Length: 332
Length: 224
Image (cartoon, rainbow over all chains, first blue to last red; front, side, top):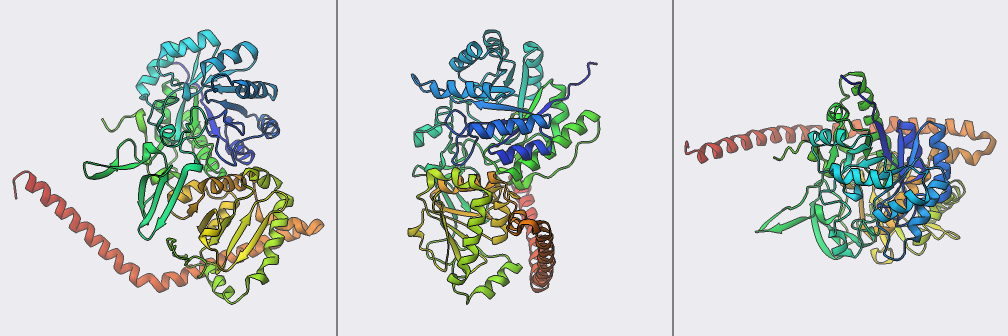
């Protein structure tokens, strides 16, 4: 039997302090974004200036960790300069890879920055061998972040068909049930989307209205949920809204819940996955430290053949609930 | 506490902690007497963490109310990079601020120090935010990203004596921890009997729910 490859632990950082927390907690790689709409977490007060990225890369490299720069939104037609500059700066500052989604930007990066390692963002929604082979063959993409719609068995089937292209899968954090990079729900309500502006349900359009009965969350004036006084809450995205249909209020698309695959790491390692990704550049450094420590311990235990650690991450999950999502498709 | 009982806002029940007792003691104190403490705190934060105001630059004109529910006052933050202010106020009219962040003082401090995750606090309803969500998210991210360590920041005020000051601050925190533990014991003693009764009622309710469920299931099968 072939020896199992130790997967890289790829961790989020929205700020330099979170980057340090991730590296110190045992991250192999940290992924970050610039402070503009070139990345899919373009949230207020978040992300890196060029100087902060340079310092962050130095800190990570000094501790043996890599830094990946997400430039994973889609450039506006006729205005690609901001995105081109982001790729150039990531290359110039010594990023270990750029995570890209737009096919034109990928072509630009492959042509103008041949030394820059390219990863395909989940925003590109490449979920089958033909698609992945195309990006690898035409642009030299080395790794693909798989959409959160595949089972472990499907991932295991894809990996040998695309070798030597690496796969990276999400192991913890927020879930996106829509076709990533193509979802227009946020755009429909607010005019801004993660694909073009880097924001899903932008904070500028979110309001929480408190009353004696609890909290009402609104997005651009649409009421999308009401939480009882002690009921766990979730993100104010339309896909996690609770709507009344046929007289019953329910989560029509997805309940507020977080992905947690800590218990299935050995299966994902056996499936030939190269890197495990933790979602949450928008989360605080306490989240980063807790989740990275848990998955560092989990990967180390799985590789050593030891029992997986029983680490409770409930307190940091959305809605206070966890799921293994599409990996197991327990709802079937 | 007057600060959290403003009209139109969902009241939060403050936890029974030493901070609550401190808040009761501070009740008669005029905010103006506390203002120098917060002026010094703001100067310290500006000096040690200038990146916070840099990240808040797009929101310089927004007023944020920080409302510790266990203290009899709230703080009004105006994050102007050149001239920020942190004002102690007995009352804050919701209409005069762009946003409000409300929670127990210890939770707000832990959030500022990056010891807890803001989203997790919101999910578990330990933190209430109202008004302009954008400025609240920006402030949370800016503060979390600054890597604030209040003990080290406080100790830095003492220059060459920073080390002893840090040790003194750590000892004070230990003392506060012991006090907290004592207050928790008092709380348990006060509510213990009621809690026991509620637990037994809860267990009985769970039994009854299980019985009803079984009966309904049997009825559906036509056995009842």
